[in-house]
Image (cartoon, rainbow, N blue to C red; front, side, top):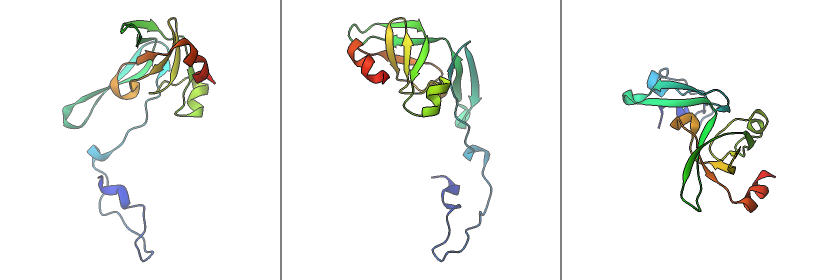
Length: 135
């Protein structure tokens, strides 16, 4: 648990709790990566332990797998249909995990986290289920 999780709270007596130190650089957070459809752009960040995190800023293609045949193909993303994680993301066309995207193969649900993983993986939805999800 980070050190600063209870500094915004007050003491049981109602008194103010003052921070005893500032955040270390390893405790800093970062802004969410809002992946959109467009010219491929990536951002590589150094994380704790020297690990590298690749963030997708924008991408044209997704790896879509068909669960009936077991095949995976790299296809173009036509548009973002729906994003259940945030109503604002719907309007702006931001891709996150769980977003519904339209591809030449049909409608697909994003199964990876583009802002964390550095790629966009999606699973093709059956034709009947695709219409229900779009509402």
